[in-house]
Image 1 (tube, rainbow, N blue to C red):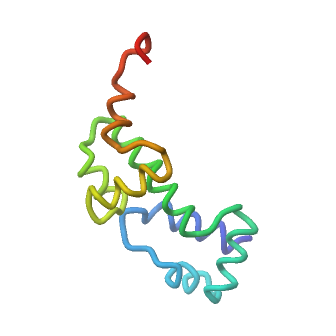
Image 2 (image 1 turned 90 degrees about the vertical axis):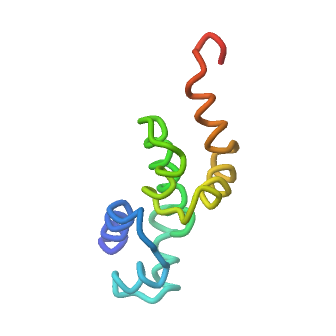
Length: 110
């Protein structure tokens, strides 16, 4: 478990950078297969999905703080806005633009 705690800390500290499964496993001194299985057992999801969800959570927070979609995409480690949009829609169910419009809508209209 200590290697997974360290991996989670690393993931959150480096969301904006490239992050491969091989890199995460090597940092923990584990094979890719062992790291993936251990991660899934401890966290309940794959490392890839966890990183995607963490990046989307960061984007949501950045958008709510007023950052543009393109700036939020870059700050959260997505290659570009279209890369973000694909992942965002898959995980959240709407595009980042639709999400922003829903956030800005007055509560009485929601």
